[in-house]
Amino acid sequence: MPRARTVPERSDEPRLNLRLDLGGGLRVGPGKVRLLEEIGRAGSISAAGRALGMSYRRAWELVEALNRGFGAPVAETAAGGAGGGGARLTALGDEVVRTYRAIEAEANAAAAARLAALAGRGVG
Image (cartoon, rainbow, N blue to C red; front, side):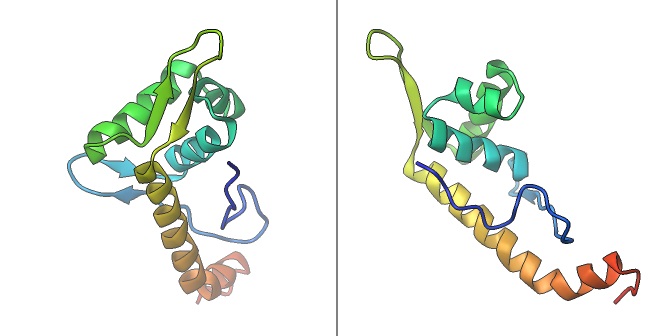
């Protein structure tokens, strides 16, 4: 299922790039969130990894790090076979994406004037 992106992946507009340090070594940033969004869109960890230019192993490691950090799965997988396998986000995975994007949007809105001033060299 496609996700609406709050902040464009690349933009000429200045913006914040956030990483959330949630304690216990759990970090959530734009790469992990983008991976979760791609899993939701593509229905596959391997397809999500390919779309982001990373190996299946790296994508799986990032999902597992999130699973361990949150103490519950952010994505569920189904074994392959005649019907094919796949993956989908859990309710927790959806919540992680929605919450991160909301924090990102709020932070960018709060910092917009100062970012614009920095980008225009009129430091605010």
